[in-house]
Image (cartoon, rainbow, N blue to C red; front, side):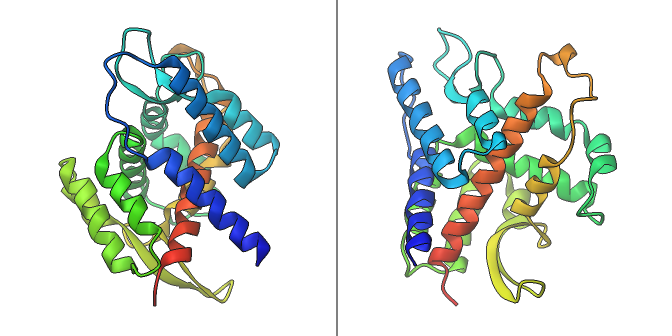
Length: 246
């Protein structure tokens, strides 16, 4: 019970840090970016512990702008002009390589991967910047809300971004896991795979033999981004299971 309560508090804390709505500031606030980065790092390590993958993640993922004059601030690669959305778009462009390297989800199709990347890119782009995500997070905290009600908020988010197709293919679902003999609730892609399972499959891919220098990235940075979104979907799935009603 103590462990469950701790996990719930930590996952709520991290979702608050990521989903809280912060209007654009005409003057980039470096102090705020630094403090937010530290808070996110602390929450990630509290959830995922000090494993090498998690340490690599916090060493490379920060919150900030890509240059001193930019008003646009998002999660980005430390000391480089790459937002996490840029890294996701690059990995999406390598679908052939991703398909050839996957091990645990052999039936995962290109359409599933494209939908997954489009959804994750959209989430990443609007973290800290969208009121609908903030409202969705607030609703996730309420035990009286069920999955159908949560899905309505998710649909509003995607439709408001002009992504009606994602509003139909990305949703919260409750599915019985026969292997673990439990009912699992989380974000699913095309009413099939859980997003958490997809990102964990991608996280296992080795990028060290891929030519990344031409675009200015290194393998550890891609690994860090994939790890971040693995923890991101993990806290969402935990939060959903905490609040979902039969």
